[in-house]
Image (cartoon, rainbow, N blue to C red; front, side, top):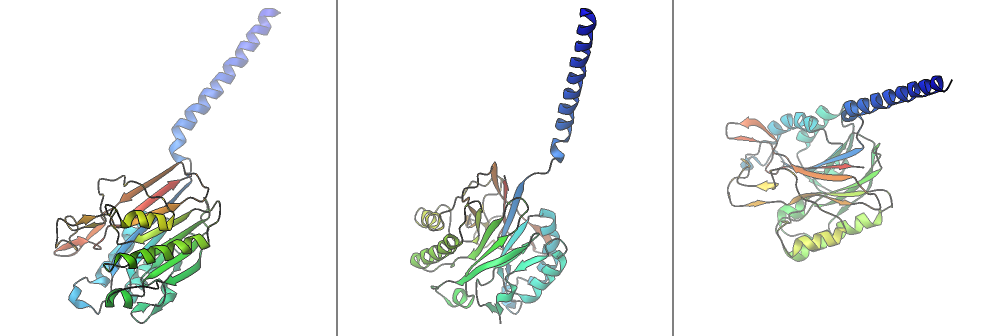
Length: 302
């Protein structure tokens, strides 16, 4: 009787071991197919200036026809454009990506060739989003920046992983430090106004502030109360006159000035990766780059 009991017990233990081993093998074999709880955001200064400015030789319509395929290939959840001023170009892009990015914010701000609020900022999303608020910066300098009505737009996105808020902006190019600092502060106030625990905020755009600037960059981070991180790709610069064939007049001018900052608001991500991507397609005998800036893509895993 004893030996029969032990035999049955051993058989059961063997069966349990086989089942456990099989389950472990299945998990290992299928771990890449387990859905990842990730949020991805792209910010890109696309230089889609009014096509009437032919002296710029930037051909926004040609590039707008090629950009959608690249966006779909990169497949971020949310896209933030800066310098999205040419109406026809934006309509072309919007139509071509609408099946994947059905939600769009920013176009309603259009007024003539400038924008009444958050000038030149347009956002696309795979998931429902609503505008929380748009502002026009109170200070600016120079005809181009002031006529562009630069500002910031904050939206809330019902992302399936976690509800998020995304701010898009384009900070003053040139001008005084005081003007830039004023615009930093106004963006920071907008973020603070809608801050909620458990809803991470992302501040995205062309901040026209070099990371190596030991005075302005720390003030930018402090004003936004956000976190930055290292770029994990070989490309480290978004304004790169050495590599970018639309921006090659000064090969020594290479800077990171476009960012996706994060304000976690109590959310603790597993990882946050930032990459800079060179997006190209031959659109002119002398040009492959589809903008004079390279986009930044952030992927946050929760």
